[in-house]
Image (tube, rainbow, N blue to C red; front, side):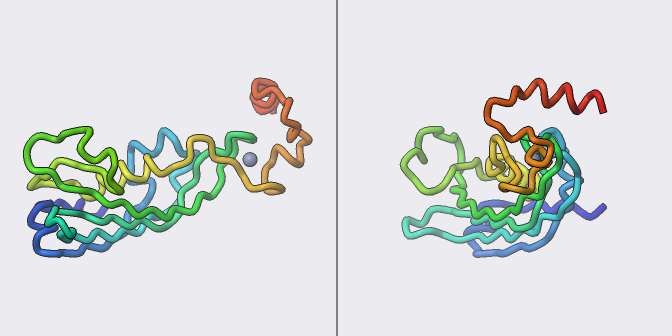
Length: 162
Ligand SMILES: [Zn+2]
């Protein structure tokens, strides 16, 4: 187990700090509910900066892979992770509508920002709602279950009887 990095978010942004590291997918508890396995590693890079309007910003880049469950065959599939999130640090009250037209989300500034927790939030948002194997890589194809009219419950029943 490695130390969980915490940062003073506003100071990190105003001083233009950077932080790099990697975290095992299996160490991200909230992801386990949506993934088929704990395989994979996520490399992250966090960069603080001030934007043109002097706003305190963080840019979080994620790269790696994880294994969600294919929604056709329900087997694990490798999903490549490539996410870049820009986050505006808001001191005081968060106005949930303030960033509606912006290319970034707003989060509350804190002296103890949990970098891995933030990474997990962004990864959860980035994962596809219904991931599927590519054409020809899905077990459902070879099992002859690829017809669109296949009842998903019939697939489930087939899996259970194995
Ligand atoms: Zn599949």
